[in-house]
Amino acid sequence: MESRDTFSRNTLDGATSPYLLQHAGHPVWWQEWSREVLDHALVEDKPLLVSSGYSTCHWCHVMAAGAFSDPATAGFLNQHFVCIKIDREQRPDIDQVLMQFMQEQNGHGGWPLNVFLTPGGDPFFALTYAPVREEGGRISFLEVAQQIIGYYRKHGRFVQPFAPGESPPPVMGELPPVDELARYYDEEYGGFGRGQKFPPHSTLLFLLYRLAAEETPLARTISIETLDAMQRGGLHDHLQGGFFRYCVDRRWTIPHFEKMLYDQVMALWVFALAFKVLEREEYRTTAEKILLCLEETFEREGFYITAYDADTGHEEGATYLWSYRELQEALSPEEFSRLKEIYLLTEEGNFEGRNHLVRRPIQTPAHPDPGPLSPEPVEARLLALRKQRPQPSCDEKVLSGLNALAATALIQAGRLMRRPDLEEKGENLVGHLLATFWDGNSLGHSAFRGEIQRHAFLTDTAALLLAVTLLAETRDGWDKVTEELTDALLTFREEGRWMEARSEDFRPVEAAWFDHPTPSGVSLAEMALTRTAILRGNDYPPAPYYHPSVCGFLNINALIRNGEFHIITTLKTLRPEDLPAHAIQKRGSPETDCFRGTCRLYP
Image (cartoon, rainbow, N blue to C red; front, side):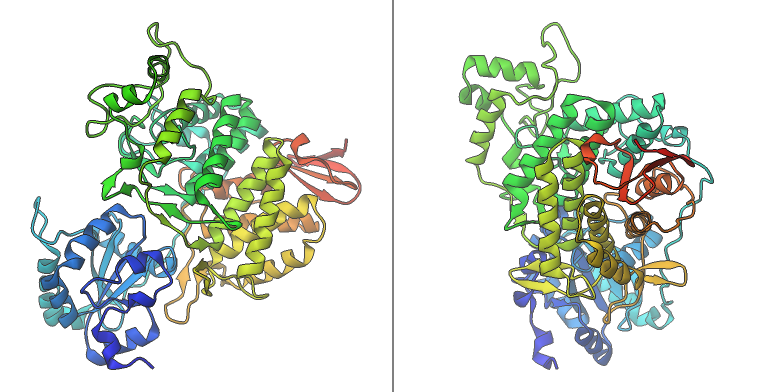
C-alpha cells in the first residue's frame, strides 16, 4: 500500500526504464502508472496528466529540460494534477489508446504525448510539445495546464468516456495492383509521399516477395528506386552502416538522426531479400553494413538494445556531421579527392554549416560514379575518427518482440545471403529470449538492469512464434515450443478480434493493423499461425488483400495463403539458400512443390 507521502514526490528514481530515469530529477511529482496511483487520483478527485515518450525522443528531451524542469510549472502541476510518466516502449497498450485519442482530437500525433484525463481515466485533452514560456505562437505548458483546470472545473462531469477501437482497412478483394502504390510513389526521388521520407520496410517486403513470384516491371522500378534512395541518401549511415529513423526532406538528404533497432532489423530483411530477388550485389553490401552496425553498436550480451539518441551533447546529429575544413585537415589530398568523388561535399554544408554524408546520385564527367556501395579505405579512416568523438546516448533496455524480429531478420538474411552463421546467430537469440522472457505460459516484454517486465503483449508473442516457425523448417526440436507459443498467442484472440493486451491496470486494448514502422500485432499473429498450419500439415483458407501502403506485411501472409509461395514437402531438409525466396519447406511425403494451386513431384 502506497503512503500518502509517496504521491508528494517524484518516485521515478526506482524505475526500470531509461526514459523514466531521465525524468527522475524533475520537480514534477512524477509517478509510474499503477493501480495505486489511479486509485489515489480518484480519492483526491484530481485529474491526471499522463505524459508518454521514449528515451531517444528529441522533443521529449527539449520538454524535459524546459517545462518539466521549471519550478513554477511543476508547482502548479503538483497542486492540481496527479502526474504520470510512461515509457511508450514499455507500455505500448496505454500509449496506443492515448495516441488514438490525440489523433481523433487533433488529426495528428507525436511525442511527447501529453494527455489530460479525468480522475476516472477518461481523456479529454491532448497535446505534444509545449514550451516553458510562450514562443513562436505556442503558449507555455503552464498556461495550458491552467486552462485545463479551468475547463475541468466547469465541464469535467460532462466528459464522455473514450471508446477506442481498431477498424481493419478496406479489403482489396484480389491481389492489389501495384498501381495502388504508384499513386503514392515519388517518381522523382523514390519512396512514398512528397514530404518527409520514412523507410517503407513492410511495403518493400511485399513488393519483393511479389516480384519473386511474378515479374512486374512497375514493382521492380518502385523497389529499386526506393532501395537506391535509401542506401545512397542521408538515411544511410555510410560509415558504420545502418539507417536513421527518417529523412526530414523529400530528397532523402537530412535525417532525424535517431537509430532504432526496429529500423535496422527490418532493413536487414529488406536488403537481404532484395539481393536474392533483384540479384544486385550492392544490396548485399548494404545488408552486411547493417550487420556491422548491429554488432558494433546494438549488441549486448546476446541481445540487442533498443535505440540511439539523435542528439550528442544536446546537438542533433553532432556525432555524424563534418565541416569541409575538418575533412580537408583529417585526410590526405588523395583521400579528400576520393571522398569528393563519392559524396556531395560543399564548404557551406547541407546541415547547419556542416556536411552529412550523402552519396552522389548520378555519374558526371567531373565526378565518375564510384559504383556499388563497396567499402572504401577513406570511409574506414573517417569512421575511426568519428569513433573518437562523443557518441549519442543509447536506450539499453531489451524488448523481447524487437529481439524476436531481429532473430527473424538474421535467419532470413542467413538464408537469402548464403550465410549459415547468421541463421545460427538467430537461433541462439531465440534461445536467449526463451530463457529470459518465457515462463511457460506467457512472454515478458522488456528487461533492464536485470529486471523483467512481465506484461504480455500480442506483438511480442507473435514475433517470437514467427521466428520459431522459421527455425522449425530446417531444425528438429522446436515442436514443443511452437505448440506452447501458439497456445499463448491464441489467448489474445477474442470474438474474432486480436487483442494487443489485457493488463490488470488498464483497459483491454485491441491490436493495431498498421504495418509501419514494424509489422503490426495482427500481421505478425496471422503470419505466425499460417506458417504453423503449413508446418503441421493443417488446412489454411485463402486470405483477403488489404491496401499495400497500410498492410504490406499482412499482404505477405495473404500471398502465402493464396498460393503465391512455394510450399515444398520433402523427406530430408533442403538447404534454404538453394530455394526460391518465396518458399516454405516442411517434412513429409509425398515429396511435392505446391505453387498457385498446383502440386508437382519434387524435385
